[in-house]
Length: 233
Ligand SMILES: Nc1ncnc2c1ncn2[C@@H]1O[C@H](COP(=O)(O)OP(=O)(O)OP(=O)(O)O)[C@@H](O)[C@H]1O
Ligand SMILES: [Mg+2]
Image 1 (cartoon, rainbow, N blue to C red):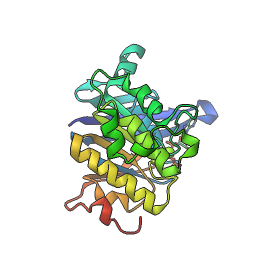
Image 2 (image 1 turned 60 degrees about the vertical axis):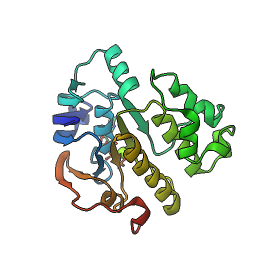
Image 3 (image 1 turned 120 degrees about the vertical axis):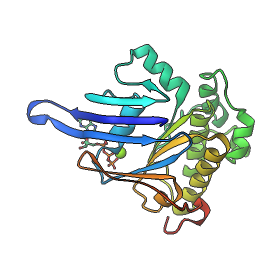
């Protein structure tokens, strides 16, 4: 398994404020798989992504990525892991408003010893004509494509996406999903995609549903539907 999570537990607060969120999550994702994580609001999807991405600590359990244990890594090793292996995409883009599209991406290019070609990535993502614009001058879909380029420029092995289409209309969502599909095909990037959109589960290899802090469903799609052909997006 490229990603193996074992009996992961995570809670917030203490005493009367104690909230157990993840109560023993065990899941695995193979290298190159796209995996959707579903669950109702507050079920712990973002928390799980943050624990896997080393953005938050876990109470107990194990997260192994490519054979490396994340739990208990020292801060410098943890930031190396995030820098070298991970890309993050969030619902609200988190671009730097006073840098151009090209500059927003270049900031992350310097983090990698083997970045992808920036112009090629701009081309793939349909941003070549927008590269000198600033984020506030772009539509939501264009901003998300820029955020995707920023996450991908390092050519990360694992891409963590938290509601990547949550702020987008159906047509723009489809464009973004087609891009993720293409990136997965070209670069073999392993992807975890948290989403409320029920249609997206049909395009990925694997689907996981979280309920009450535990895995409720975990299955492989025998047949995948291309993002271009997803219904009811
Ligand atoms: N930093 C925090 N401090 C305290 N409680 C938190 C913190 N982060 C999350 N929680 C709680 O943990 C639970 C899970 O939150 P999480 O953000 O992981 O849910 P989610 O499944 O991503 O929900 P949504 O679909 O609404 O994004 C919620 O009850 C939330 O209130
Ligand atoms: Mg969330």
